[in-house]
Each structure stands twice: as C-alpha cells, then as structure tokens.
Length: 372
Image (tube, rainbow, N blue to C red; front, top):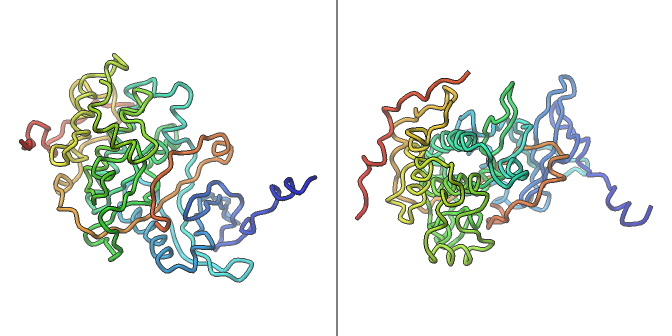
C-alpha cells in the first residue's frame, strides 16, 4: 500500500467518540462549519445525526455562537416538516480539546436534487406540487417566528421515508438563515453582504439587501420551476451572472418547456417571481395558489391544509439584525458518495387521500393590493 493509500485510510479521530449514550460511528457529510456523523445509541441502537463544529472554529466565539444558533433556529420553528434538533452542547475529544456539537434526527431518503437525477426533473407534476406545498407550509411557520431561510435549493428540501410514505418533506440547513424579532441575538451583517446560492437567490439577496420571507417565496418558486422544467429559470454560477440573466428579461415560459403543467401552477410561479418584493405573495398565499383551482394535485393528503396563523400573512420591515445559522440532515453514506456536488453558496465562513379543504385564512392573490 502506497503513501497516498495509507493517507486515504487514515481513521477520523472522532469515530468511536462517545457523546452521552451515543457513539459516533461514521462520517456522513462535511461542510464549511462542521462535520456530520452518524451516531448510534449504545443500548437501544437508535440512530441520529450529530454535527461537530470544525476544530479550527472552536476557538472563535463568533463561530461558536453562530453554531449554537443553528439549534435555536430549527427548534424555534417547531414544525414537523423542518428537521428536528434534539440537543446541542459540548464534549471533550480524545486529545482533551473542547468540541461543540448539535444532534438531529437521522433522515433516510434523498433530497430533491437526487430525486431529479434520473430524468433531470420530476416526471409527476402532482408530486412536485405536493412537495413544494409541504415545503411552503414549513417555511410559513419559520416566517411566523421571524426566520428567513435564504438558501432554498434542491439539496435543502429532503424527501425522507416515514412509514409507508417516501416523500415526507423536511427543510434542511438553516446555515445562512436570517433571524429577526425576539430571536435576533445582536449579531449583525452589514448591508451589501451577499448570502445564498446563485440561480436560486432572490433579486434582493443578489443585491445585498436584508430580505424578508418573500425572498424565500421567490426561491421556492424557482425550485418548483426547476423540478418541472428540468432547468433553472435563470441559470447562473455567480451572483453577477445571475444579475445579468435577470436583466435580460423573463425566463422561458414553463408551458413552452412542458405543456402538461397546469396554468394555475404557472400563474403561482409567475406571481412568486415578481421582481418587486411588494408585488409577491406571502408564503401562505403562494401555497394557496398552488393548492387551488387547476393547480391543485388530483389528491392531497388531508394535513396539507392552509392553516397558518393570520400573522404569517404580514411582513415587518427588514432590519439589520442578521444571525446566520446552519442545519444539516444526514443521508446514507452510499448516497452521499454518488451525489454530485451541490451548488456553491456564498456564505459567511462562520456563518387514503382526501380533497383539499378550502381555506378561509389566506387572502387570494386578487385580494392583495398591487403596487402600481
């Protein structure tokens, strides 16, 4: 065995590390802030995912503070379609160094990006609309708590397996989320700092402004367009490239790319991707557009209803309070090994079916005042 082979075989020093009644058994992912491990309960055999802050960040109070905010953001949402954070804390590794961790539910399944790999898109239009409907429900709950995700993309919408269901949606990775109101901790990011993934970010994100929940509405609509068309409305690898594409005019009409997409879905995406923030629907209104009229899937699970509190329809003025956070959910290591690299995010380095019930909560798009 050559030197390079020995280097590849070098064991991760945290494999076998006990954290409470759990032991880290294998690495299942690695990001800019930390490494995610599969952990197993020593007595019960239960699995969970544990994210450990990189050693080089452990000495930075700012990095540790933001790392802890990951747990706070996901826990604050208290929503079944947002990855569950079970605990967070510190431990001493085998070298006697203080390390920081977050443990989360272990998810088995695949993200939307991998679900598109076979053909480049979702072949079942209804399935795509349902997935986005669940994602919208979760994000509306986040917005209600003053949390703007800012990085909605295929890798961050996970289709987990639960019972007989294979598309149990979980929103992942609040790594660059913006916290406002009572959740804001005083961490600030100056106007002009750009967060997000080119191609999915909203125009206001690309211009370095502090977005509210309607930025996530844009990104979720872009994701649905991508799931149905097999391409992005504004393909871009960099922020300047995205802004150039945006100024060139509207994207290709979705029904020109795929005729069977209902007009209601096209209309919902069009409304959600209006350049002016004030002309866009809230997340709850976007969900209503998707789940009504000819846009509605032929059969909808009864829990996918429009039931968020009315305050979710309101948006406060953007503030400068800006606290990036990060959530990572695990997937089987064999899926990670075969997965393509996700689009790069511009980040702070620390940083039986029933008919759809009718809604009496969210106003329709016609009821919204339109900016002249």
